[in-house]
Length: 217
Ligand SMILES: [Zn+2]
Image 1 (spheres, rainbow, N blue to C red):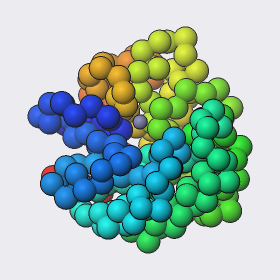
Image 2 (cartoon, protein in one colour):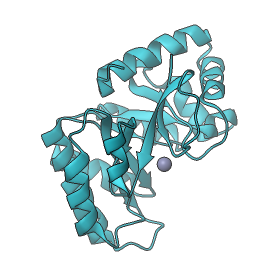
Image 3 (cartoon, helix red, strand yellow):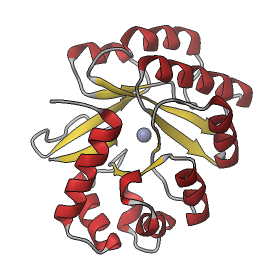
Image 4 (cartoon, rainbow, N blue to C red):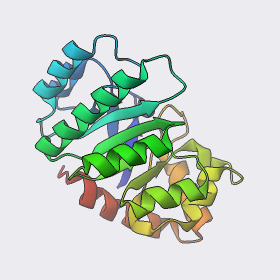
């Protein structure tokens, strides 16, 4: 079994992979038993009070495997202080629910580390769509965080590929996010980049998934 820990695709082959659908609105969809993560995305905070109430309502469902994607984005228009406040509230919620956090972070890596250092979440923290320099990867790894890699690793020259080559085996995940490229291709790329068998990647992802998401199908 393969694992896609962050995707926005609704048509996926569930025989091939367990995929965590990432929802940033319409959290009631989780009531159908859909394997998902739910959270307030920094791009979409206009109606954050109402969304947060809905988030709390569904976050405890067993098929909701994580809180997120939530986080910080310096490129979007959303007010910065609001982003920080809503992110911190979601860290508190994740702690209370004992569910991992899936983080969206754009050009705010230092700020993210500072908030994590202060808030000291008691749950695993996964930074999704990682494609930054290895020095940034190192800082996250030092803080015990997990990195998730998507289509960026298909380009061997990408910062993502360089980071994936050197991070500890027990601190990474693979994902499709918005890409149409199947998760199997990410596994192949990861095997090539880390110079191990694809079977070893499959086993490692299984182990990492069990450690962080604690989900029994
Ligand atoms: Zn996403």
